[in-house]
Amino acid sequence: MLERDTSYEGVFFTAVKTTGIFCRPSCTARKPKPENVEFFAHADECLSAGYRACLRCKPLDAAAIAPDWVQKLLTCVDSDPDQRWTDAQLLAEGVEPLKLRRWFKQHFGMTFHAWLRTRRLGMALGGIKQGDSIDNAAFDSGYESLSGFRDAFQKSFHITPGRAAQSEPLLFTRLTTPLGPMIAMAEQRGLVLLEFLDRPALTREIQALQNRHGYAVAPGHNAHLQQIEAELAAYFAGKLTEFKVPLHLPGSEFFRQVWAELAKIPYGKTSTYGTIAATLGKPGASRAVGMANGQNRLSIVLPCHRVIGADGSLTGYGGGQPRKAFLLRLENAALQITRQLAF
Image 1 (spheres, helix red, strand yellow):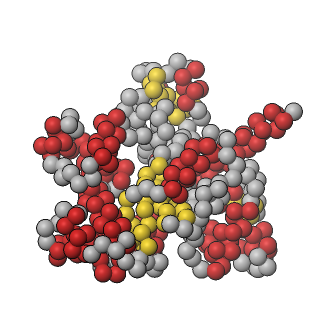
Image 2 (cartoon, helix red, strand yellow):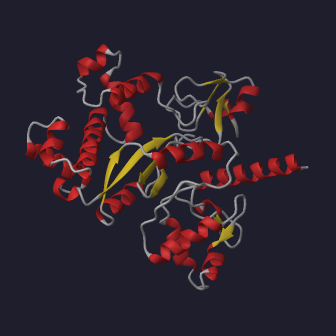
Image 3 (tube, one colour):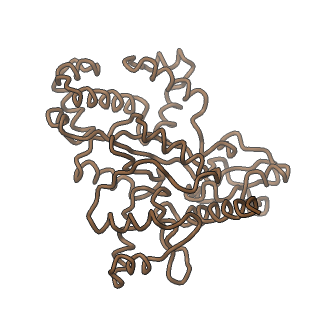
């Protein structure tokens, strides 16, 4: 709690006796004295103990859902994607530009205006893929200079507009979960990436998708992203035990073999690196299996959280061991409820 560690999002809640308020572990409010703090595993336990939800970190929301003023602005952007938003226009809509900048930096890793530019470039990428000329794509995106458009396009997508017609757009969106915000990326063949936003390896994974696999990454939506958002909500509600969203898994043949074995681990069960290696006919390859497990880009969907040490310990997990423990508890609890209902 003192370190505001986001990997504990949803794992526990902090309640302060002197204020009667409970918070998420990453809350930025001033930290209380240790003797005034107690911890709960679930938000409803905090409420039952008489605590009120913090207005700053909103622990009853699923991982800091966008506030109303942000949602209203995003709706305006969707309805008129060509509009240019100046600070004066934001103020006219009741949005404080500095506050908006901070929110976007925290949740998207870029400012609002940078997000708008990337979004417009993503639309230009889609137009080029559909046969639009580079000139039309540039001017439709609001660029008066073709050279300026080319520079911005290449900086954003790591590819020139001329080569974009042969590249595969990889659309991304931000999702909220009880364990913190996640980013989902999908192309026309299926879901490619689903990671917690605070995963240290996330930037490296996205760069590999751009540089090694030739993807042009842009904000947007498609059917696969809509499907994973709905399935994740059902999973965390304990109502979904198997993901149906189509997947596309760029990687080496060995990595794909390991990932295929991950997908076979039943809901609520666990396996080990050694077991997976033996199943693949490579009993001495536990370390290689562990490396492939760590390179899995589809958290939860390809359940690497179900792989534990040979001694039963919770070994490394890219999203943090507290989240791994939470996911295993969630699945075990859902199975127990199902068994009780069966009787």
